[in-house]
Figure 1 (cartoon, rainbow, N blue to C red):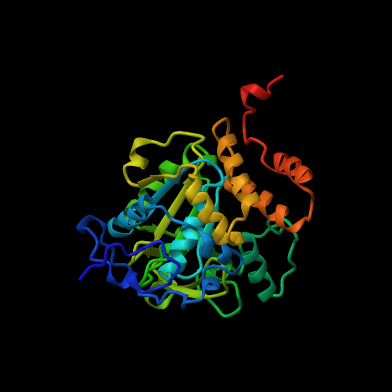
Figure 2 (cartoon, one colour):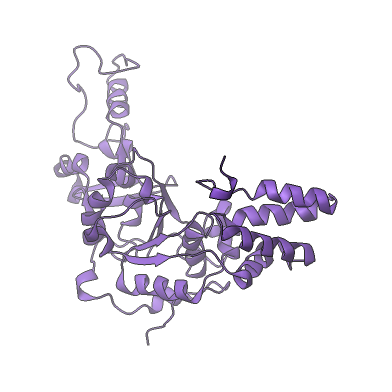
Length: 358
C-alpha cells in the first residue's frame, strides 16, 4: 500500500521511497540500462560529508512536508522560494538523508550558467592532445597545433585515452537524470540568479527526463551497442550511456531555490510544485536553536525575541541569530558587550530600513 507521507520531516532515515506509488502516466520514464544508486545507508554523512549537519538539524513545517511529498508523488521539481536563511538549500539535504537518496548533487547557478553546464562538460582540446601524444606528435599548449585537422582523432574508442568518453564528464543535472532505480537528489541553487533563458532551457529536459550528448551520438557507430562509459559528477565512477542518449528511470527529487529576486515564466512555474518558506515564528526558532546549539537559555530566549522584533522591520536570516547565540555562550563576554555584539551580528539584509536611512 502506498505510504503518505513518504517524507515525514523526522530525523530517522528509512526506505519509504520504495513505497511510492507508480507515477502519473504522463510522468512515467523507462530509461536504461538500469543503474544502482549510490548506497546511502543510514549514515547522515552519506548525504554529503560537508552537509550532514544541515541535514540533521533542518526542521520542516507541516506545509513543507505536504509539498515535498506532492513533488515526490507527481515526479515534479520543487521550486522553493523565500528570504535568505530560511532553509531552502538545507531542505534538499534533509530529504535526501531521511529517504536515503545518497549524496546530493548540487548545481550552483550564476548569471553565466547554461543548460550544458548542468548536463555535461566535454574538453575537445584534452582529447586532441591525448591523440597526438599517442601518435608521438608534439603537443601545443594552447589552441590547435599548426597544420593539424584533428589528426589521430577518430570516433573509435580506444584504451589510449583518446576516446570522446575519456574527456567527457556528466554534470549534476546530467548525473541526476541517469536511469537509477531510485531517485537521486539534485539541488539547483539560486535559479533566480541565472540568465533569463535558463529556466526556459530547463523546461524540456525536466519535462522529458532525458537529453542527448551530440559528441557521443556522432561516434556511437564505432562502439559495440553504441555504448560509452562516461564519468559522473562528484566521483570517478563511470556509467554506461547508450547511443549518446540519457533518459531517467526514477525521476530525481529536484529542488530549485530562489530568493524571490525575479519572476519565472508561467510555463516553468506550472511544471513545478511551488513552496514558499516564511520566516519562522518563536516556537520554530526555538526548535531550530535547539537542534543546532541545544536548549536555549534565558539570554538566548531574549535574543530570539529581539530577532523576531527586528525581523518585522527588515530582512534577517536565521543563521544570524544562531551566530549571536553561539557567541553569547562561547565568548564569555558581559551582558552589555553581548548586546552590542548581537546588534552587529544581526544587521538587516538588502535595503536599509527607512528608520536607519540618512
